[in-house]
Image 1 (spheres, one colour):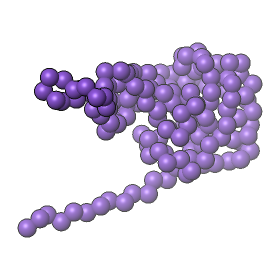
Image 2: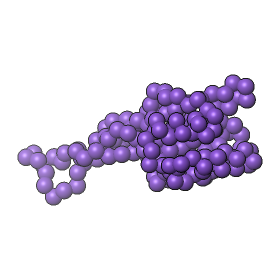
Image 3: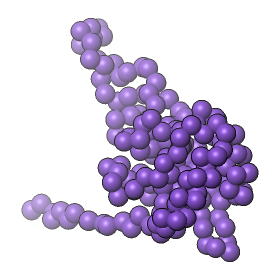
Image 4: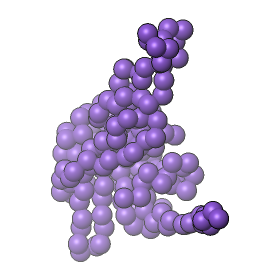
Length: 168
C-alpha cells in the first residue's frame, strides 16, 4: 500500500514594498550612498543563499539590512544577480561525447537572478511595511536623487512569478 501524499498550499503575505534599482556601483558603494540619502545604517549580513535545481551550487546574493526600532521599519538591500558563478547540472548539448558516450556537465560559469523577471535590474530594496503610496513615492524620489543610480521603480510583488525567492 502506497503512503498517502498531501500537498501543502501556503499563502504568503507579501506585506512589503519592493523597489528595483539599476546601478553600476558595487554593492558596498551603493549601500553607502543609500545610507547617506535615506539616513539609514544598512550593514552587510551573511549572503542570501538560493538553491537552483538546474545548478550544482547554490546562488549567493549580497544582503544588507537596517532595522529602525522607533518606527518598526526594516530595510533590506539585495543584489539581484548572484556574485558566484555556478556549474550547470544540465548536460552539454554538443555532437561530441566523451570516450564512453556520456555528456559532461557545462564548465562555463552561469549567473543566476534572485528575481528572474527583473534580470535587467541590479539591486532590490525591500522596505518591510504595508504599501503606502505617499511613502513609496517619497522614497522613490529620494533614491532617484542618488548619483550613480540609473533607474529606480516601485514593483508590485504580487505580479512577480518568482516572488517566493523574497521569503527569507
